[in-house]
Length: 413
Ligand code: UDP
Image (cartoon, rainbow, N blue to C red):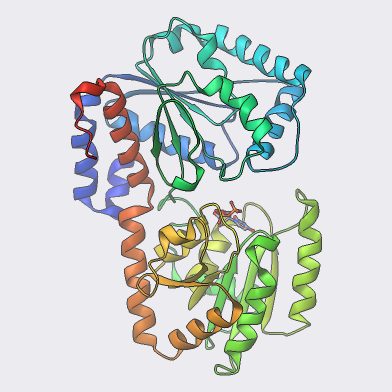
């Protein structure tokens, strides 16, 4: 089995991996600790499960620690999470006290490791109070926020920021998420993993098997949106765009792929609205997939001619990079992180209405060469900007930056 870095070289090229090795050279041997609150499930654990071994291969003494807590602790941190995303929640004094106490217990267990570390990355709100609880730290501490904090509930933000102000730096995913904090803020957008089940290369037979499973005709054009059933993802707008485009491409098929409604009470309503809009059209496939259907989503993205992400509000929109990486032009809502990924008319199209989306679908379906060229540019753009290796490169850059003293840096105005 080749080492992990060499496996990434197949996706991003040897030069990009050599670049990582060069960047990491001055960091060899430094002690880095990542702390979060779960080892499995969710995007943060997924990213750390790759980033930490990659750092180790680069010679960094990287560790990943997970804090533990009881149900009240996780209920409180869920309130923080929802509040940071703008929900009207409150964290009462008893919950806040328990949140700090739980962190104090975890700090006692990890004290030596945290005191000795050169750099500590604390991920999301759950372990944020650790910094205050390790007063004899010798390293630099960075708070890494993975949450969409573009419009936080101010009360909840104020409660959390008491624990954040002492950090040496923080990292947010997008400029729109940056906050008023008394330290340097770095922006590192999310990334997709080209080796994961969701994004790895598939055989044509695997793609065909998924077409067969859902009754998709390979001889006719197919457009796709992969999204949770959420109004901000605008599945009904996607159906409207499909109907308008179909006037010029009568054989067109539409697939809407999303999860069931188990964990989101609103999803049931949105699924019903979507099914009503589909109105029994046999060429509209409204799929309810299990949460681990990564390979199915991979195959659907490969089977599509064009992918839509017609969101009206979006944090980043990982589905956009996922489709672009598979060489598909994406027609995306002109909002949030979609704007970061789609360069309008170059790597895809940005649209604001179903009519705009339909116009672009019609244009691309009738100009196959343009469609393929745009897809190829989309793939290149993701390779250079939104793969896990870029994410790692930026982590290394931040580590070099904080490990050196400010006066050794040249700030370009
Ligand atoms: N996804 C999935 N199953 C679904 C719908 C979405 O696995 O039924 C995945 C999708 O491929 C992507 C992620 O969930 O990796 C959604 O991330 P994104 O940033 O696009 O949107 P969010 O759901 O976070 O708003």
